[in-house]
Length: 264
Image 1 (spheres, rainbow, N blue to C red):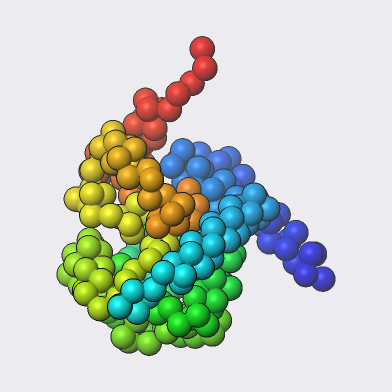
Image 2 (cartoon, rainbow, N blue to C red):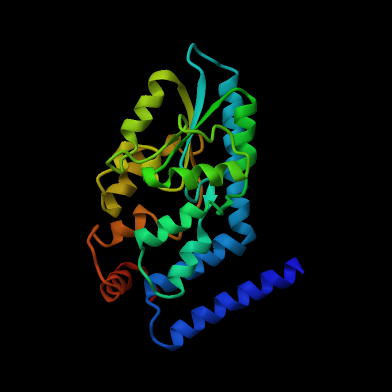
């Protein structure tokens, strides 16, 4: 029955995608998101990449536990697409060729029903079992605290309380919030799907070349202190393509056609 329901859901998603295409309504941007979200929901490769990331995180944590200092150890993790999987919400928007809508997003997070990213619960519970504090540093707003807490507690995730769920405080940069944690803890790992989850060099919405250059400069940290969870559905990477400007669907499609490498 579970396999049958999964097949029905998959068929309905494809049908919605096809209907939008037939009507000429689905932009390249949202068409791409549909494929990205199918990958996130259905591809064994996506699950394998998440397990790989969190398996590596456990190895790095075990190494850190051998060399404890005076400060207690901590892990800082993002929430969305790092711990919680919001692909059903994103898919509902993409198949209808809709842009991000804050009210709709908050209605989704208030329900507290998002599933977890593969490997995340096991790793976070393991960290807590070894006496490592888990801080959820997220750019959800204060009015999303109740739903966020409910969602984390649904899966018995550790430290799902006000002291450890650090929401957005006026600005999207997470650097100030990270520094407050660092004052009291030795943060041994950062987990996230978006590069600003790791370093302030990615703040202020830099363009693609700058992001790539920064990544080259910080490459030694990826896989050692920075654990990246795959997310091709959305993130700062897409806004960087558009010069961080507010563009309509046709303008975005034009940019994507111009920047993609196409074989002769």
